[in-house]
Length: 348
Ligand code: MRU
Image (cartoon, rainbow, N blue to C red; front, side, top):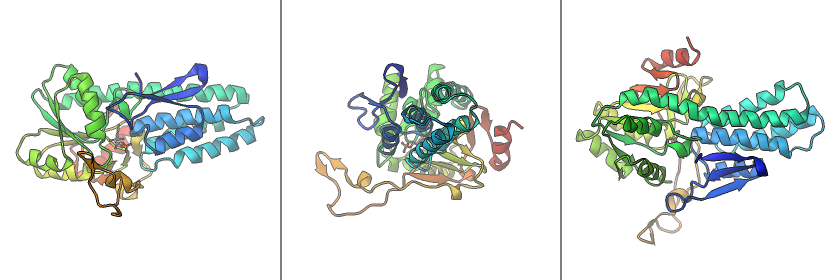
C-alpha cells in the first residue's frame, strides 16, 4: 500500500493517517487542495518526499476545483492554490519542488483548460511513481555502505511512510537486510512526535528487521561504547555545500557520531537539494506549537506542569563537516560536498 494514492472514481486523494499509527492503520480521503494543505500542516502525511507528492496532487485537485473558463483566470486560481499548499510546511523543499513542477506545466501549456486539468493529474501521478523508482535507485547505492553484522542508528522516519513508497534512509537499510546482511537497528524515538518509536518501529516490524527503540538521549552512550557502526538519516533540505536540514536531533546525533569516528550518512533524492542556498544557515526552520512537547503522558499522567511553555523547532541543520557521505539516486557523494554535490546534481 502506498502512503498516498489518487482515487480516480471519486477524484480524491487517499492517505494513510500517520497521526494514529501504530495503533491503527486508517485511511483518510480528501477532495480539495485546501484539505490537502491542512493534512500536510497537521502531519496526517509527513516526510519530505511524501509531502512533495501530496502537494503535486493538491495542485491537480486545484485544477479540477477551478471553474475558470480562460487561461488567465485558471492561472490565478492555480497561483492561489500554490501559495496555500506551499505555506503548509516550510522546511522540506520537496514540497516547493513538487508545486513548482506543477506550476511550470500550467505556464507552458498550450491547449485547452480541459486538457491541462488532465495533464496536471498525469504529472502528479508521474511525480509519485518516480519517487518510488528513485528511492529504489538510492537504496541500491546506499546498501553497499552497510556490512554484514552492522548495528545502525536511524533517526526519525525515512521509510515508505515518509515517501510515496519504499523510503530513503530506511529503504537503504531495508535493501541491505533483503540482501541477507545481518543487521540491527537502534531506532531513535525522535521526540517530540516520536516518528521513530511510532512509525519506523512499525515499519521495521513489518519487514522483519531486528531493532530496539532507544531514547534520543541514549544515542551518545551507544556510539561511545562502540556498539554502533553507522548512522543513517534522511534530509528535508540540503544546501549546495552539503549542510543538511533534517528532523531535530539529527545534529546532536551527528556530533556524537563524529566524536566517536562513526560514519554518518544522509540519504535523500535530488529533489531535496536546494542549490539556491549556499549553506544550511539559509534554510528556514519550522517552529511548531509547544503542545507537541508539553502534551506528553507517562502511565496516563500528564508529564509537564500545566501552564509551562515550550520551544519546538521541528528541524536542525547538520553541518557538512560531520557527514561522511550523501546518498542520492545519482550515487554516493563524498566530501568536499560544496564541489561534489552541485557537480553530481548537474551531471558534471
Ligand atoms: O516532520 P517530519 O516527520 O515531516 O520530518 C521528516 C524528516 O525529518 C525525515 O527524516 C525527512 O523528511 C526525510 S524522509 C525521507
